[in-house]
Structure formats: C-alpha cells, structure tokens
Length: 117
Image 1 (cartoon, rainbow, N blue to C red):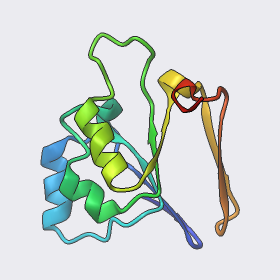
Image 2 (image 1 turned 90 degrees about the vertical axis):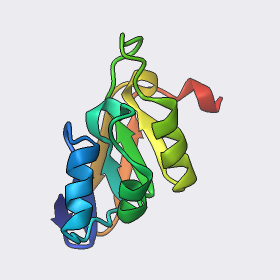
Image 3 (image 1 turned 30 degrees about the vertical axis):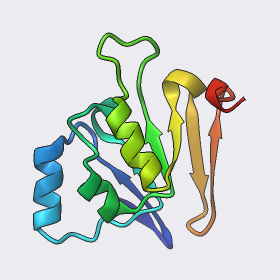
C-alpha cells in the first residue's frame, strides 16, 4: 500500500484469494482509491469481499494482449464493475501512468480503450 498525504493505492502483486483472506481476517484498513489488481486479473484474485473492502474508484490491470491464460477473467471484471471501479487495462490501453501530488491524481493511458468507443 502506498499512502502519500490523502492519496492511497493498493498494490497486490500476485496475491491470490488466500492472501486476500489473510488481509481481511487481520482487519487491515484496505480502503484505497486505486487498486492495482493482483495476478493479472485472474479468477484467483480480487474476490468480491476483498474488492468490497478496498472500495476502489479505479482498478489497474497489467496484462498482456492475447495472453494464453485469458486474463483478465470475466468474473474479476464483473466484480470490479459491480464495485463501481473504472477499469484500466494494459492489453487494451497500452502503458498506463499515474501521477499525484498527494491530493489529486491523474491516470493516463497510451491508447484509447477500444471497448469504450
């Protein structure tokens, strides 16, 4: 987790459901505006309970285009959408950059998401 003034972003790396359950059971305050989605958005991460605890406004998924695993999983995308998170995906949008001064932040993508056009 990165906290800088009022900015918060949660980086989950390759944490799967087991790690998410451990965070939840420890009662950690996971609320952040931005969630770096774990495990390339696989079906083994971003459980509904975990996403509900984070309450992200934005979700960033780093995943290769045409990957052999079919990431991100449709159930993960549904979970994020139901939580109200706007999803940014590198397979559709290229490089994603984020900048912040600790109060406001901006997320920029190299390419426009073709699914929103």
